[in-house]
Amino acid sequence: MENVKILLVDDEQDILEFVKYNLEKEGYWIETANNGKDALTTASNFQPDLILLDIMMPEMDGIEVCHKLRENKELNNTIIAMLTARNEDYTQVAGLQAGADDFIKKPIKPRVLVSKVESLLRRRVVNTQSKDQDNKSSIIIDKDRFLVIKKGEKISLPKKEFELLLLLSSIPERVFTRDEIYGKIWGSQLIVGDRTIDVHIRKLREKLGDVCIQTVKGVGYKFNPEEELVD
Image (cartoon, rainbow, N blue to C red; front, side):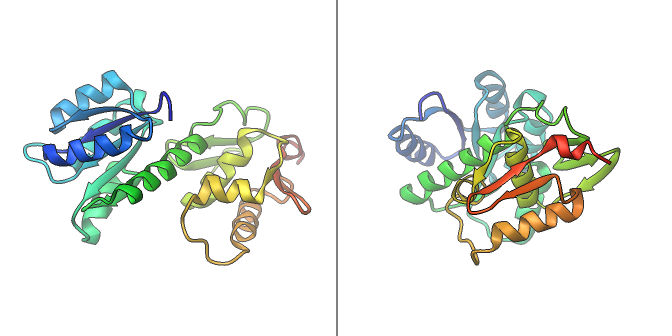
């Protein structure tokens, strides 16, 4: 993973060294910070693709750090995953509200860590596709707010529907195969049923219009911006 930058933030030095060692073996470029204040400074200078951020830290906890990171527009495309040993729902809700993308539970197992990081980075590839791909159509995709604006009307989409739309619209007219969509949107997550993509496509069509996303029989799906111009 040459040139992929990851910032590790944890007040426990042994965890920093453990995670750094295992990720550097995979070829990632790693920087570390052991408190929230240093994390903010390092993130601004390092511009990481991914931040692994501990929740329980003295002085400034991970929730507050995450809030402040999300206020930095230069880090809009950075994925933030929070490291936590706690399973309480309110902790995860607070993290998500602060702008976290996902959670990794402690204790961390090396193979699970690497797999999770790969999955998170695939998500970033989807989220950072061209910002200009929708200029030809009447659909505006605001990836920072997970919001779609169609002809002036705001449409809020669930996360997977939004990521699917963002992927398809990243290269208009390009056909994305079903396997490619599974890999980039769901990664290694368990998929329940073979119709998962079809269900999400159907819901997108209900909200955005039937002609916006076209089926290429036996292959996959493509985004058709020109059709969307037709009233």
